[in-house]
Length: 174
Image (cartoon, rainbow, N blue to C red; front, top):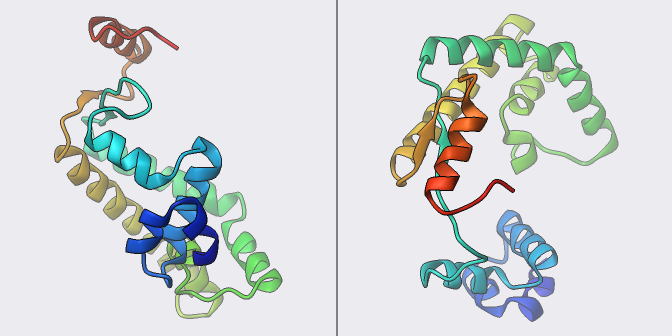
C-alpha cells in the first residue's frame, strides 16, 4: 500500500508510517474520490480554502438517558439481525485476527470474544452496549472541542431548524 501512496501523495507517504495500513488506505481513498492528495486537502483546509464553504453542525441529544435506551435498542437490533453470524462468517472466509482495526470496532470485538467462548451472550450484550456508550461519550467530548452549532436530533422541527440556520449563514438547502 505504501508503494501505491508515494506516487499520488508523497507528502502524506513521507509522514505516515509504512506499517499504518489504515491511514495509507484512507489517503488512497481520498485521492481516488477527490482526485486530489490528502495532504493538499489538509493544507487547503488549514489555509481556509478547502473544497468550499464549510460550517460545523452537530446533532447532540439533550436526553442522555434516552440516548442510552436508543443505544441498547440499536445493539439489540444488531444482535437480532445476525451480528454474531456475520462475524463468524467473516472469520471463516478471511484470515482475520482480533487486533485488526475492522475487528476492533464496537460489536465486532464483543462478538469475537463470544465466538472464542470468552464471554456468554449476556456479557456480549452488556459489553457491546457499554462500548457503544463509551464511543458516544468520546464523540461528545470531541464535539465540545470544535465550534459547532448543536441541534437536537429528536426535534420534530430539526429539518426546519437546520434550514433556517443554513439560510442565516448564507447557504441554501442542497
